[in-house]
Image (cartoon, rainbow, N blue to C red; front, side, top):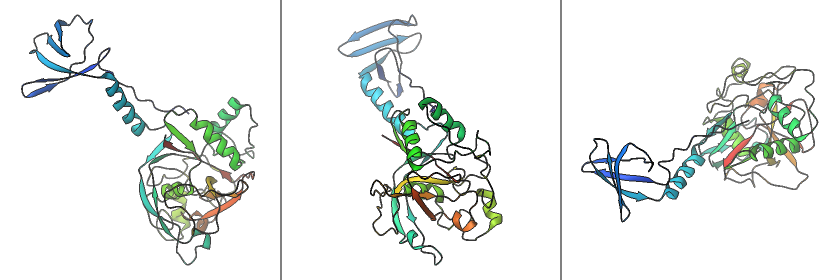
Length: 308
């Protein structure tokens, strides 16, 4: 996947200038060899330029390094990776206190999540197969359902994490990984506070707008409507690995959006439900887990990136 790289506009060969003439302010980008200038006079760091019929203006010299630094800072914060959605920092209530929610979704706590970007869809076979070819790895089984734009399946947590790291190594100014569990739920909720994106009603009719569920195989990504943040398949199609080690409740969880870290052999969290799930398991707070080396045809993943 190749990121959208914004073009950087540099003023002149060596420097830019800030100019003022009476009540007006002008910036003149100059190349010293240009034939358009009638005259250029340099005196004590002051540049006097007469440009065609324009009034002569006085310009103070600006260090070009400071201009480039400002532009670089802006680029880091504004560049959107191709196939990703930028998600602003915010606070939300993670978990559920509903009477039917299991204990591992409790207690509800307020979490502050820093800004990040998340892939619009689950990683597809097309994307993962490119990685496999480049690294000389074994292609995962597609169960005979097809590859292309279906979500990649039969991927362990370790394999998913390695793909995310490989993808991140190609993105200057970004650190990429599997989403943290808090990032995932924050993105899935998309500012909603209800059990499902459509509300608190356990409705198959409404679920069918957003999710592939009660099915016998996966569907191509983007088969259903996107959520409020512009993300597809956050519910159903495949369970999605996240960074965190599984804990039986949130009593010792962080509130800064970071991952829960445990022993190397911990079970890792899965989110979102899968193609065979019931509507109940499509709830935004629902959690599942399995071991790092576990592979299954109902498990895939997506990628999260943060400015480095």
